[in-house]
Image 1 (cartoon, rainbow, N blue to C red):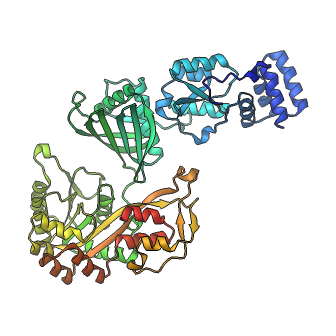
Image 2: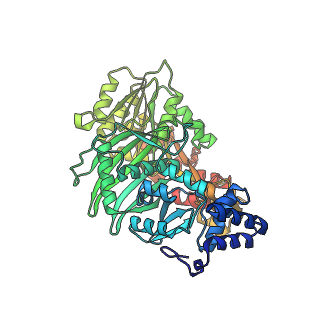
Image 3: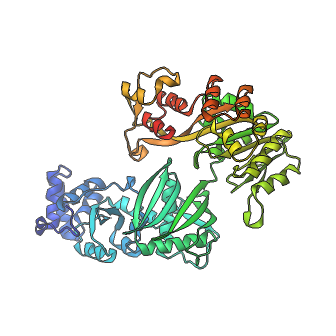
Length: 563
């Protein structure tokens, strides 16, 4: 029943007797056991449900089902529900504990609240009044409800377990920890970490505000918030990230370090002034995970062998290209970790430094202080480096120093933004480098995209149609047509998305003598790509289709990321 308080006409009967009848009718309790419990109730005044529980005549879930049936409500399993922070703060903690109630979220414009005693109509009235909006009540087991309330307000058990907690270093003294906005941000960060989100977006809308998470590369709505709460949350996040809280019309950047559920994370914070108010984006980096091994990045064996040969050379320029968020830096870090030895002087210049690597000198760009990529590169070259990692080639000067360093006996690694591997040499020429400098310094280009992996618990095998194979240009890849592919379904393990985790699809361009001739002749990307294909370069589309045929991801996902 979708009603604010739900006082059904059937409740005009005696509630406790009606509960007993419902439990007997459902087969949850025997008539004799019910009669004994009613007799005890007449003597003690205790609630019938509690008597049946204490006598072990019924389980907590059976009692919740019985209560839900007589009030035309639904039963919720709180073991599988993560309450929305924006909903939780609608009810004060003290009241929630006293009335055994927990707001769970918003549905069709109503606040959904879990309770364990729908017969307490006064409590339901109080909850709706305090929440300030139309409420819909669902029934939960008492034990689950108590645990969920503890988790929502971050109360720890004596053994050190308990709900997710967030500690901030440093904690701004200007903002007290008892404010609702503090609980909102803490719970939002804990939920984002639990869902393995890489980014959190807080933004104003015409109707108020919304929060979105980016999980496995896909952005999705998480909850809606009031404009007042969004404004307060934005102000707190700016203070935490050491940003100017008074500046609202200019974009700002900041960073902060947090510990969420015992897990240390770094958070990059960016704000954008929009016509509706400031938008905030949080980039989450779990610093406890450490570096990935290069064998775990999804490389095709032949492509990996070619890449390893490139970054194990004593000199030359190695580039990893792709759009923002395609895992370029992760790939470079994995390569550097493989060659990190005591006989190598490895220096990096990054913006920002994302992973601290023992044994490597790491510099962070500080443009406000005059430390740019090109100035840092010049300084590094005066300090006897063997390997140089540059976070990104952004301009012609950085590209020129990068190439000259490779020509003077250094291994230089960096990233660029190009659509594919063949476009990278052409892009360097367009930036102002002479073709001879590109042809003589560049050794290898890896282009990559991140694709979602299928959930192994719910993926479904099927026979592909001829139309699908033609749409993917499967014949042009030179790969045999697969007899079966897999599609996504959705299950609790993958939060209904059908996907879980991400890996990369790659293509690798080796700068062979034939490729150098194409670069020196300043020919087109298409000509360069054709020569690379003859050398054995596997395109990203072909690499992805091989992984789809192996059941690692879906056909649709490969088409999406490689089109």
